Amino acid sequence: MLYLKTLIIVVQLLSALGVIGLVLLQHGKGADMGAAFGSGASGSLFGATGSANFLSRTTAVLAAIFFITTLALTYLGSYKPQASAGVLGGAAPVPASAPAAGASAPAASAPVASAPGADVPK
Image (cartoon, rainbow, N blue to C red; front, top):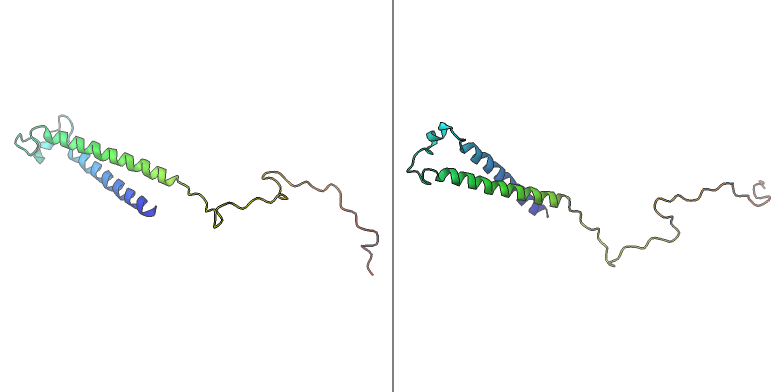
């Protein structure tokens, strides 16, 4: 279980870093700074608007992966394994003389009388 949690944490960390990087690479509407990185060229690898579509789709995929790994870590964090039943496969029975949980034992209202002559030293 520890290896699974570690793997999910690594995937979550990588997807978070990917989302951060891709959001920083994208440019907003009217931002001409993106032309410095070649997104203004029509002969680029993805075409005139292909890089914006590629970056936004990749960001959406990485955000979905981040969301799924967060839910998985939440589920695994709340998982409580069942206590082992032992070799016999059953839990030990509760003794009948034990009081019920939450109930207090009856308090003695008067001290118990001792036998006559029992408290006299010899």
